[in-house]
Length: 76
Image 1 (tube, rainbow, N blue to C red):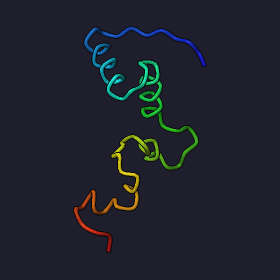
Image 2 (cartoon, rainbow, N blue to C red):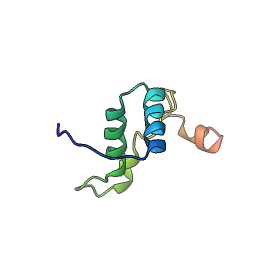
Image 3 (cartoon, one colour):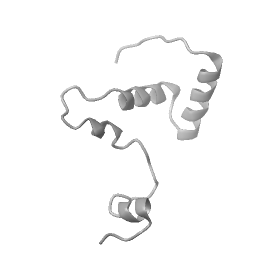
């Protein structure tokens, strides 16, 4: 890993610390995750994949019930 330093305004810092606490990760890990989500893969022909895993429903079967979750109906 490369160690770096950033400057944040107090409100952003406080909100980020709270979000890290809410997720149960360190501030540094929150920053790493956030950067990974915001940077698109260099060699990908599917730029939308950068959003894969961005949301967690807590439902281990979410990928099989996506139609019900998104559209409120069972898969055809």
